[in-house]
Structures are given as structure tokens and as C-alpha cells.
Image 1 (tube, rainbow, N blue to C red):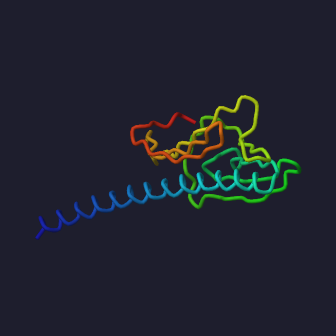
Image 2: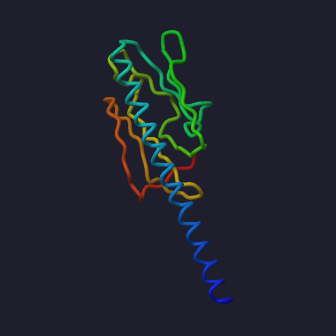
Image 3: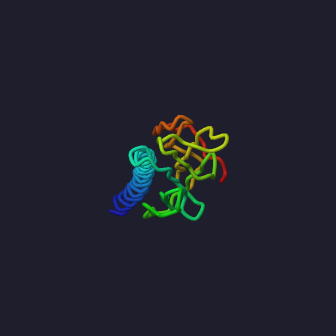
Length: 149
């Protein structure tokens, strides 16, 4: 009876750990999809309404969320706060600006990659990439490491 109880306890512990890891992975994938969608929507809105927009991290941290504002007067158009803070490492901490035609603008803009980092680990399975042309892509690379940020 004690052996059965010990085995049951061990299996429960393994199951809870696996569930927590799966939950984190799903949350990271959802954040990556939300971020990619928000970048695409901002680019499209800039082109459709023919107004320059700024897409920036909340409080300087992409892991807290992001906001969209008009460049002309700074009026806030949309803000998204993440329900659970996530570690997101960006290749550039700059905000992203879209022209009236929906193209990224800024001196020397070479694109930006946002790595959604694994909780408690150095890896990044999901990346959101904004190319210099304005194309937004969602990539998965399990072997990629998050830089310290």
C-alpha cells in the first residue's frame, strides 16, 4: 500500500510539472500571436487612415504590453497590457513607427526581433519579426536563446 501511495505521489508530481510547462508554452505562444497581430493591425491602420502611428512598449518593457498612438499628437489609440508579465527580449528597445503608407520609418531602421522567452530558462521558442519592409512574421525556433535583457 505504501509503495502504491509513493508511486501515485510521484506520478502526480510529474503530471503537475508537465502541466505547468505546457501552460507556460501555450501562454508564450499566445503572447507571440497577440504581438504579431497588434503589429500587423497597426501597420494596416496607418495605411488605411493615412496617418503615422507609433507602436511602443508599456513602461519601456515589451513584456508588460504595448500601446499604439498617433505620431502627430501622441493621442493613445490602443493599449494592451499582458495579463501575466512575460520576458520579451527585443533586438532594439526603440518604439516602432509606421508612416502614412504603413511602412516602418526611422533613421537606420533594420527591423526588430522580439523573442518571447521561456520562463526560468534561457530559451526562446517564439519570435515576432518585423522586417525593414514592414512584413510581420511569427517564427518558432526551439534552439534559439534569449539574450540577457
